[in-house]
Image (cartoon, rainbow, N blue to C red; front, side, top):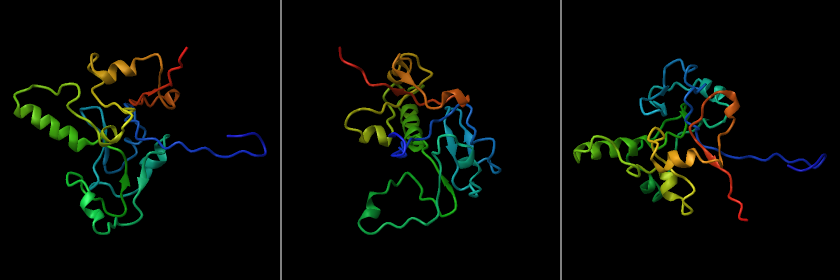
Length: 178
């Protein structure tokens, strides 16, 4: 940002784009990074050996290597999610779109004699924590779901779509008031 010679680098952190043709998946020698039937890019942390091939292949730079064992002072250790395992040093981290929440909602729907999840049954932690409702999570294959309607919006754009990774995260441009 800026003009020469006063140019500054601008950094925009992004989450995993959950690509349909993810370049991180075929490079993993242990198949720790793989595509699920739900269409997510999953990471099996106890299978990861930390080669960092997936991080090098990801054009979005959304994967990070655990250089240190996590340490949580008391009482901060009580804030950890008991449904998410702590990873050890030497593995790759990535956003999994709260796969533990998806699994819990699927089990709850099956227990309630429902065949499939309904729109709004699953909310990721980031979407739940966002007071502006700027993050929406749902089933893109259901054309009537809120997330599918937003993804089809004329304001929608995908990061680095021209690379052919087929990202599933859609960013909406700001609406301009007339």
